[in-house]
Length: 427
Image 1 (cartoon, rainbow, N blue to C red):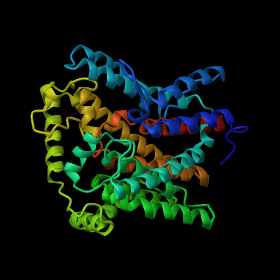
Image 2: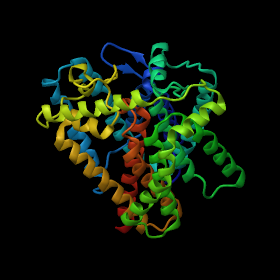
Image 3: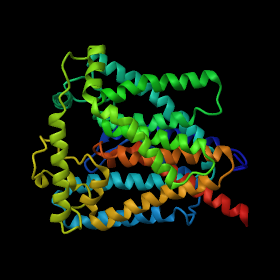
Image 4: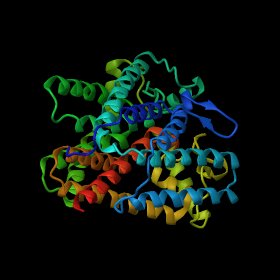
């Protein structure tokens, strides 16, 4: 990369590394439950990072190109606070508010680091190291049936849908596990260029060993999202001029390739299960499909019954709104619908528009950028954000996924610093 800093601060590097690692571990597994909120490792690190940033003299400066996303989340948080006047479940409101506040604080903490442009490789390495652990533990779970980080009743509930052993680790359910694997695999692909043959072989080994786990997880949205993300990344690397039209072509090609997988999904899943002899039973996802379909119907009911204002922060999972039977699972398995359910039509539409515009800006930066290292970063961000359009319709409890907030915070802060640097260079 071109000159970014006078040298990466070791203290800042350590803080970001530990913060990212703490976020991947998750709050529900390693957190301490307090009366009002969960004291997770990442929240402890947030407090340390905020104090450290203050003593390091950090300043918040916003670039015009990304200021809209920070304004949006600021307004959303204020609306989430106001929604406490009409929510039906105050406990869920307070829990949801604490997760939302954690995410927004992560956004602003990353803005404090002037060296953020040089942290992308550090971020990649941390995620890759955790992917190794997640792969090993995933194979341990599907081969032994021993789930150390999930309560027994939750395992019984999950397997009542899948009927095959599925990887979960610290992510509470298989779709959340698949989301992280898809995200990490796209980052791995972005690390394939400019490395030695040995490192490339290691990356290929990780990809080959993790992809069967993705199939076994039975998370079709994440498989499709991964294919779309990789297609966007390939097009970004092969072309000097990446446009929205080329992204659309890449998405269509990825979908075309996946038609075969979708049509024969059950056969592939059962073949893998029988090959590794996980349970000897065929997967039956009909119950899961019905539950998801009814959860979507409940979400639509919430939007219209609240007159488009939303049911309030954290209350989309309130049992009182479960008109259609979801078999005891009240969480929304769709991030986009959840925003509409809890914060209303205006915020839902605004979020989608801003999200798409942010991807367009990444493509514009990529089209105009000549530095190969910067292009790699923009390609990775564009691939991940495009993949998430599909991937985020599958997991549940997304607002509690601290590693996802860390990615968003890092990604927005990186682009923010890039824009400020470009502005300084032109003055």
